[in-house]
Image 1 (cartoon, rainbow, N blue to C red):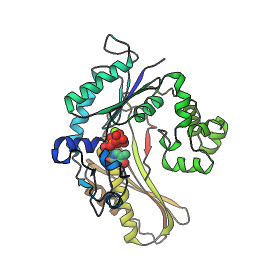
Image 2 (image 1 turned 90 degrees about the vertical axis):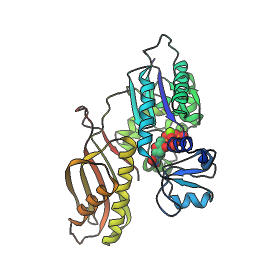
Image 3 (image 1 turned 180 degrees about the vertical axis):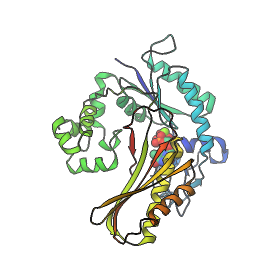
Length: 354
Ligand code: TTP
Ligand code: MG
C-alpha cells in the first residue's frame, strides 16, 4: 500500500496578495481582470462567499460582489513561493510531482524521515509552509493520487484529510463528477446528459460501456469510480504540447470577430504557461472550415514565447495568413517545443478547457 500526499495552497494568488498588502487582509479580492474586463484567476475566501470564483469573467464577479477589489497578478512572486514550498517537499522525499505552481503530489511510502506516518509528515509540511511563507496549504493523504487529491479538497482552507482505503468508496460515491480530477467540463456535461452526476452513478457503468462512450479515457473513469489509480508519482512528468480550441455555435466569417476569438484563446494559453512556468517556441493555429476541412499553420521562434502580446500577435498573423473566404467553425491554438528538458514521454499532451 502506497502513502501519497497531495498538497494544495489555499486561494494561492489571492493569499499571497493579502500577505504582502495588509490593507487587503480579510477583504474580498480577486486576482486578475478589472471591473470591466478580463477573468478572475482566483478569489480570496471572503470573495468566494459571494460566488466569485476562478475563470469567472471579472465583470460578473464585480456584479456578484460590488466591493470586490481587483488586484494584478505578480507571477514572479508566486514563482518564488512555489520554489520555497518545493524545497520543503524535497526535505521529505524526492518523489515530488508538481501539478502547477501551488500543488504537488508526494509519494512518502519511503521517505527521508524516521517516521512512517504520512499524516505526521503532512502536518509538518503544512507547519513549515506556514512558518516559512506565512501562507496556508491543505493536505490530502491516501493510497493513490486520485484519492489524495479528493482528500486535499475536502476541508479547505487549511485542511488535512485522510481517506483510508475502507472510506474510499463512500467519498467517491458522493463526489460530483465535475469535481473528479481528470474529468473536464465537456466530459462532465456529457455525463450529466447520461444521468451520471455523482461517483455512485458512474460506478453503475461497466468499463466496456464507458469505453464505448468516452474512448480510452473510459478505462480511467471506470478505475477511479472504483477508487483504483495505479499512476505513479512521477517527478519527471513532462508535457510536450498544450493546446486549446473552441467550436463556435455558428460558423464565423467576420475577420474582426475571429481576431477577437483567437486573442481570447491566446490569453488562455498564456495564462496556463505563466502558472506552470512552461513556455514554448512553436505556435500552431488550427482552423476547421464550415465544410469540416481542417488546416494548421505553425511558426517557430528562436526564443521562448513568454509574453501575452507576442503570442497574441503571432496568433493573429497566423490567422491572417490563411486568406480563405470560407466561414470557420473551429479555432484552436497549440504551443509545442516547450522548455522541458526531459526527452521522455512523447504522449504528454494537455488540452485546456476553454
Ligand atoms: P487552484 O489551486 O485551483 O486555486 P486556489 O489555490 O486559488 O484556491 P483553492 O484554495 O481552492 O486551492 O489554483 C492555483 C492558482 O492557479 C490560483 O491561485 C490562480 C491560478 N489559476 C488561474 O490562473 N486560473 C484558473 O482558472 C485556476 C483554477 C487557477
Ligand atoms: Mg490551490
